[in-house]
Image (cartoon, rainbow, N blue to C red; front, side, top):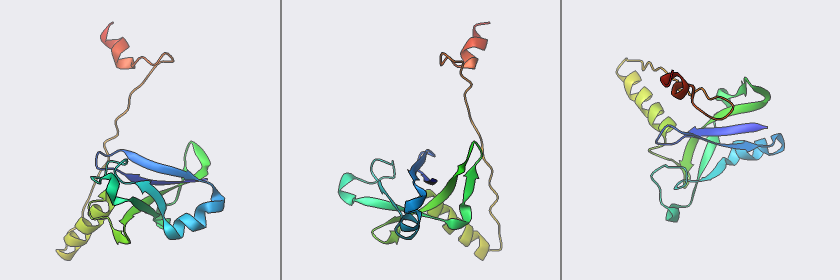
Length: 128
């Protein structure tokens, strides 16, 4: 399987898990998503958008190495979706490069630890 992914405007990963037998089709045409349902500032009348995978981003999922993960560029009506987060990042990188600058970014990972009952560890620690 391959997981075709993009990030919405709120930073939430959206993805489709696709069987390997359909990868060539998706790689060429993109995976269809309802833009309004994926929180991309689109309404239902605008039709689907396509998540076109970037082959250079292919990585096996560490917890499931038989699944390949790919980051996707968003396309709507055969044009790059202007406000797609990855598309915006690429334009900013290009604009900075024209000025001789390099964009450096980092990731802020946030997570919650839960016990088997679904209680957050922070809730347990707060009561002790």
